[in-house]
Amino acid sequence: MDCIFCKIISKEIPTKILYEDDDTISFLDAFPVAQGHTLVIPKAHHAKIQDLPFDVNQKLFDTVHKMTSKVDSLEGSTLIAIHNGKESGQEIPHVHVHLIPRSNDDSAGPVHSMFKDKIELSESEIDSIYNQLKII
Image (tube, rainbow, N blue to C red):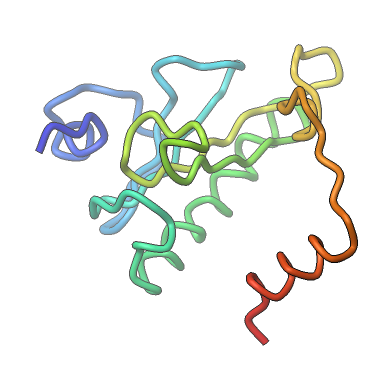
């Protein structure tokens, strides 16, 4: 497999590992958008969150929880982001969670600032989406 994250896991590519256990690994992003930009990934290769077995998902987010406290200590706030599929901006098709320290004077804004065009939905469109997505 030609996955850069799998190569990091197998130690073929050196990186600054911050935490590692049997199922997950966390390391500094090679192309950070802020000082302390950290990635948390499962060691098992899965492209999207919904592909993760439940136990691996739990272990991944246990590590996210541990690392968020550390990253949060840098600026007091952390953006936690997952791009889930190519169309959402995922560049490497291996599940990864970005932990990005945020401060009042960084150049980023809220998630809504990522989208140039806002949408308006009618009540019937909202109901249709609701019915497609609800689980209960």
